[in-house]
Image (cartoon, rainbow, N blue to C red):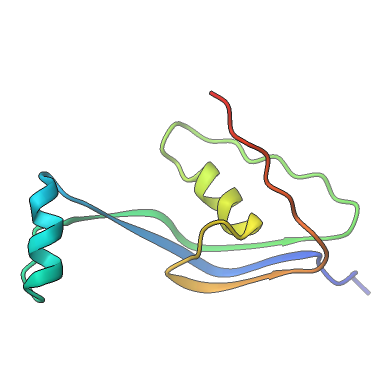
Length: 97
């Protein structure tokens, strides 16, 4: 029998919209249906279960979604789709680069 995961991510996806000019964001807000935004998927369909006592490392190239994933787990960022279940407390530390 496997232990109940303390962190469970199911089909997590996060979409960001990239605008070439700031005015394009305003045009999209004022004129629905007219978008010139480029879609950037930081995360797509991520599934992860972390059991009690497990140690996990997230490794990847720049821009691969590591910080986005950690922010979603910590609750400082909401995914566009999917479900996050965290049993217990999670604290976020300031990211210093």
